[in-house]
Image (tube, rainbow, N blue to C red):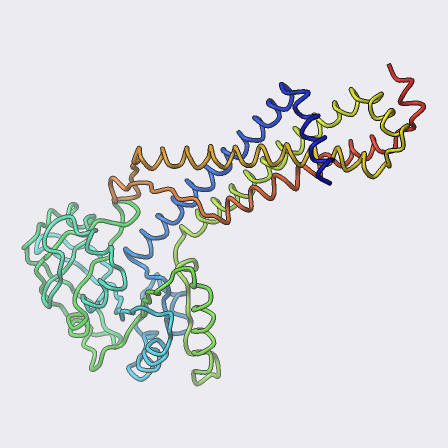
Length: 412
């Protein structure tokens, strides 16, 4: 085995230019895939972090049917106090849950005493909300980054459109579940920028103000946003929590609660899936580059060394050893391209981090792209390149091992 490996290396060194060109092509493919995987993966993670940590949370729990009607913000599908307690007990006993925040969501009319428009409001407990979505305070572009009773965080779209500034008094009029109308005056404490652009009519008030505006006897919660200790365990915690709450039934015998991950709640999940699809096709391109490169060089090697192969067969070299020799050559080319490509790719990513590339995501300005390279990605790409290199050498190697010595020696 060692002798075959030495012979394979020696044969590759005999044709240095061809070996160098082939290894270079593989290296370029590996570098391209590594950089794309790292940059796209880092951008995807940053995008998901901005969405979940600024607005949604990692998980949300609602009454069954609420999400299907969420555009209407139905108050009749809110969670009653006993149901909220059941969910709280389940979340308090869940090891992977870091914190959670109840919200009351409702629509109403917003007035600056001169003009009136519609608004969507979230009644929150500020301390718990800011722990569940820790990037929410960073969205406050003007005013203080806190919220107390009687104050409102106003979306920038309404503030600019209706010329409302921090400290101005405003009025919200809302219809409660019974159909009666109630109004309440607020002071604008801060201007809230949107997560993904200037659009959006979602403002924030204190949960107690929401209860008062809607004339609730007790808080009826629209949704409970959940933050996990480890985002990587999202699917596991979702399944466990869904299973734990599945036993609760409504009077019709159907599940009382529904648990959704951010993926089911945000349209940006489709962007994340598109990134995954692009990554898959980039990997296919790498396989194609390696396959074509190795197969081409090995076919040429067999064609140019017909007499040499015939001599080896004539002196008693078994077909299996001839086949192994060419497979080792492909193996060595794969290792060379993978190793050099991984080193060059890691160096390029290090330089990319030093350059501190910035970009804007929605209203978030100057986000720094921090690319990272996972060890499993290096291992997966290296193993893939080596396996494809060996597979590409198989057909030329098989052809070489099946040559008739006499016919091969006659070859000119």
